[in-house]
Each structure stands twice: as C-alpha cells, then as structure tokens.
Image (tube, rainbow, N blue to C red):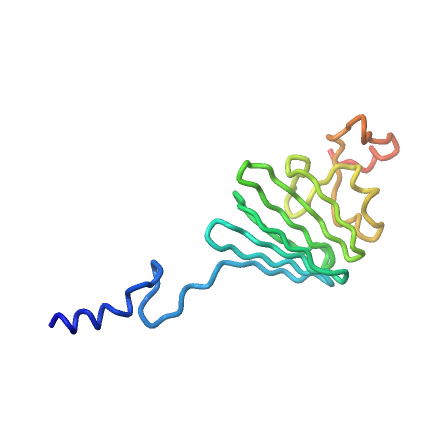
Length: 158
C-alpha cells in the first residue's frame, strides 16, 4: 500500500501550483499585435515583463518590472502604440510609425477620449503628415522650452 501511494503521488511532485498531472504547464501570459510593418510582442514571467518592437529597421527589446502593461494597440493599421506603468507609477506612452519615427510622452501628458489618444499639440509637428489625423491634440502643455505657437492653437480640442 505504501509503495502504491508513493507511485501515484510521484507525478505530482515538482509540479507548479495549478498544474494537473499529465498536463503541460500553463503558458506564460503574452501579447502580440501586428500593425502594418510593425509588430509588438510582450511576455511576462513571474514579476518581469519583456516587450519587443519589430520594425523594418530592426528589433528593440526591453525588460522591466511593471505595475501595468505593456499594452499594445494598432491605430489606422499603421501606428503601433505602447503603454505601460512602472512600479513607481510613472506611465509611459509611445507611438511607433512605419517610417521609423517614435514619439514618447509621460502618460500624464496624454488623454484618452473614447478610442482616440489626445497628445500635446507640440507632438503634431513631430508626426509625419499622413499619420497626424490618427490623434487629437490638446493645448495643456505649454512650456518655455516647448511653447505652443499661436497658429497651432486652432488645432487643439477643447
């Protein structure tokens, strides 16, 4: 009887929590978004997140311990956005464009209205003309080093 108990208990030894005998371990959580020529992939193992952005010019991989994210989204079938928050609570928003350009802002500088991202108006000049319409713009971030031009204020939402 003791031998039978040891044999039957054998497969359970060394299993991770929640794993049933005879079944493979649960897959790691992950996220993958293809967006035109861009691709975002993320995975999480224990408390560490890893994310990779692939573009025609190459791959960039980052690793960190995050409070939330990374979260990818595809805008207009061409712009890959990435959002995450560090364990210190600092949010980051990045937008990757097919031409290889990237814009990045702290999450407190970005608004979200429904399905649209609202960026500082200063970002509009840094985005190629064909992708500017994918975003709305606000005039809340007027700084001496990056002032809002009077001519740009007409493009700000209220």
